[in-house]
Amino acid sequence: IEATLVPFARETVAAMEGLGLGTALWTNNDRVVADFGLARFELASYLDLIVTRDEMRRLKPDPDGLRVVRERWPDAEQIVVVGDSWVDGAAALAGGVPFIAYRPDRAEMAQRGVVVAAEIHSLLDLPAALA
Image (cartoon, rainbow, N blue to C red; front, top):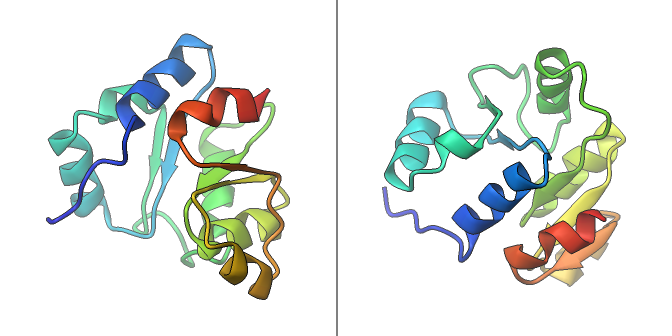
């Protein structure tokens, strides 16, 4: 896998845990790829839930992954999707949850009708965006 870790990803998920906020990964990748990447970058221990294409009926931009998150995390008071792609934003919008865009392509977001609740350019800004 040629994947690289987004700057401050580990620090951010650790901060979310420290703030008492749950974290989930919702990805269109399959479980094998997701588990490999999470192990490679030592992130799995920070996540409360991992939802892959194997658990969904339909992939993003369909919001079906949110169904899985809600079923497996029924006590979640609020769900916010953080992503870097229009498919993340479209899935959040279709699922009725706020979307925080990480380094978005603003033109594509606008073209696709994605409503952005907040925009961040560093994952270190996520705690403040969630406040």
